[in-house]
Length: 92
Image (cartoon, rainbow, N blue to C red; front, side):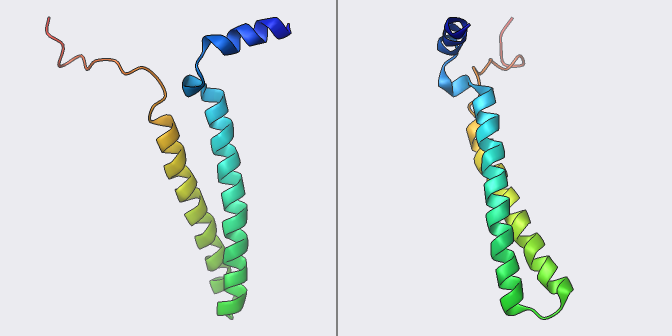
């Protein structure tokens, strides 16, 4: 069983391992959203008085975290496989 897994892993290069990329992206998004939400909560407690503005600071932190995670993950997936030629540019 372990030998079969090693054979399958050796067939696909790490640059094309989509499952590892998804795992890394989900981990990145969860870590950043937790950290940025905490930073937004602390900033909201220090800077704002009303609960609505404090929650908006938390929401802004979470949104910034998810946006930065999305950008980094899109860079990881931009080179996800072999590029095929455009059908409109191929001469028949």
